[in-house]
Amino acid sequence: MTKVLYLASSLLFLSVYNSSAQQTAYFTLNRNYQSAVELLNKGKFVAAAEQFRLVEKPRNKTSNQPVFESETSLLRENAFYFEAVCALNLGNDDAESMFRRFIKEHPENPLSKVAYFQIGKSYFKQEKYQEALNWFDKVQPAELAGKENAEYKFDKGYAYFELKDYKNAQLIFSEIKDKKTPYSEDATYYFAYIAYLNKDYHLALVNFEKLKNSKKYEASYPYYITAVYYLDKRYDDVIAYAVPIINTTKQTNETEMLRLIAASYFAKINYPEAIKYYERFQDRDQQKTQNNQDSYQMGYAYFKTGNNPRAIRELTKLVDQKDAYSQSGNYTLGQVFLKVNNKQSARNAFQAASNLDFD
Image (cartoon, rainbow, N blue to C red; front, side, top):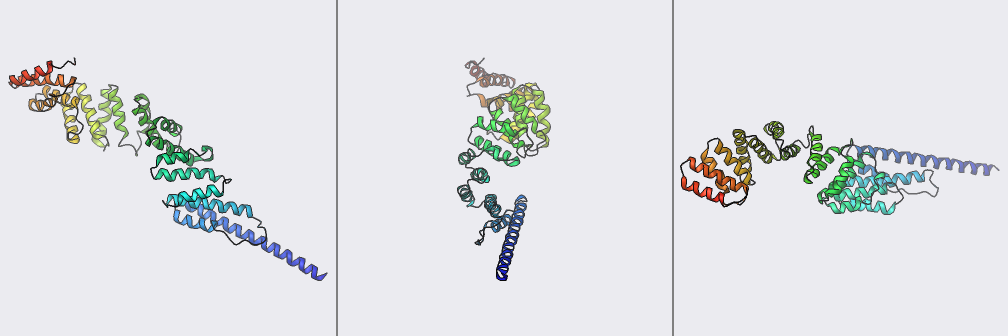
């Protein structure tokens, strides 16, 4: 009887000991996991990956059924997933294969749905946009929460944008542009840009104007606002809006903005200011994009302000052209030649104008 009691007591002790040891092991594992998550959230991907590996790597199993087997198994599965996330953020070549392995080995894990997005991100970062879309299409957006959901939508929209599928891109950007997410500003810009490309200028203007306090796009959106004002013949608005910007900030499309300002002054019959900005335009442009309208309006403005040599220089560029600006330019050139008493050249210019029929 004494031996039986001793054996029972020993077995009970071993059971309690094993249970306690397993509980301690689980809590240690969980502590390491939480530490790794904190490092991941701080962007310390190398250190986080090392911690996740400590959680994920298999331990020797005893013959006893672990008390926390399911919890431990889930921790290790998740640790492997987040180790792959670290690899992706570090640009490691094995990131995609890790996510593929996770999907294959743990299809029932909720994170397997998110893994499709992570593989898509891998291709997105490599600018392989069609491959990225192929994986994004496997994602259930409802499985992604908060910032990750917004990132998924923006990346998918931008992939469509880069592939020139503007319809789908704009549709996706419209879903996030007015929400408070880290991607709202970017989505607004590209949504407005697509509207501009589609010649939906009112929609473009409304959305570009939402970027007026944007530091990220302060060097690019003003051009589009200026262009829409000009296309709408709001010349006073072009001048009032664009002149202070062009004189105080560095603009990506500075050359084009100078052209639009000059053309607006020309439309307002303010030839001295038109010349001022056309000359700045020419200095920036270096004859790369100057067109017949530019040459005619510069030449005419010089003619009206009495600068005949510069008028002749600009208007002569139109002599061999065949459009309405060429016709008007040749006629004005004839007037300039008369002013400088060059009657033969005046006659030739008037004849060239009469040979064109663009009235």
